[in-house]
Length: 446
Image 1 (spheres, rainbow, N blue to C red):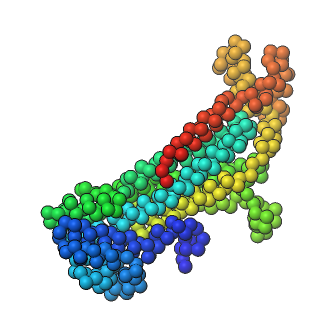
Image 2: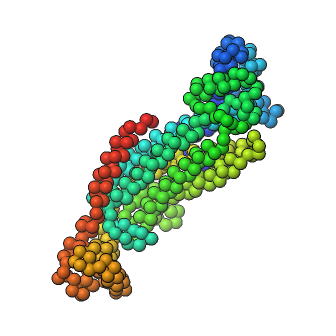
Image 3: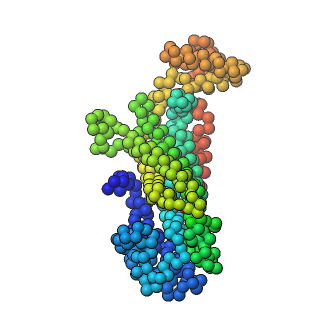
């Protein structure tokens, strides 16, 4: 075994879709529908269509036999055709009028749909986990950070609702991507359908309808790879969000922050040499694999550029990028769900970090209060900037600077420096978002 998908990453349910045997089964299914359509139209005898369709499966066509034939003729689809034909009394009608990529691209569409259904289900489960987490920590105050620096207080629940909403948008994009790639073709070598004669349109429509697909009209020898670019762009976008969420957890787990932590098994080892380590290894894995998924977008773009009605340059790379991108995307969504399901949150550390900030995150609140007392916004901003810089320089609490400058007599500093009083509508936002998402995912069909 060479590929880590074989022994380290990926769930069996989706990996099975892209196994050699499954790929052959998808091809055979398309061949069977083609024969049935020919029989319905009257291009071949009814019994021929029935026989070919009944034997277009792995019970009759064995993978080892297909490989044996391919070794001789050096053509995988034709090897499948020959292996099916030799099992049939009416074998002469197998693959009638079709070209290889009528079979391959139509089978690809079936694989895409089956794989995306698995990812869709997992996305819904991830959203549910995030909704529950947001509700649980609706009132948990923490520091917001911008540019890696103290910003304003937020709640952990608000942070999680941002992740939940983003994931939900990906769920809608998945549905769009599934629609975009649900196209096959049965149009022959250059898309004219010449080998099917006058029955071309009817035959293609029958095949696609029976497979739950739509017909690519017009097509060349292949389905337009702009559809594949759309799919891989979606996968890259989704992977980017998973990397974003994982990166946030990795940052919040840093020793000097320590506000959340990946669940750590009782006997889990963090380092081969440092016994104290509790590393965010799952989130790190998600980040690394997300980069692999995103890298598959480049060959998908390149594959969309074909010579005339097609060349073969896309074929070899698609054998890699299609299974890898889909299997790994499912994997990191699954692992992200697992991380959030078991996430260890430290509210007391969040409050401790607020206290360590020397009141600087409340500078805006003081500025707004100064404006309400009659000072111009710009003047208040400059004054608070100076006070904040002095507090940082002297390592003093901002409240002490304000007291020194006589502001304690003009405003209630204790109230203004209470982060609970300056989280805006964070709690209400959590309520609104979780309610809306719960309602919307309940209406989505899996």
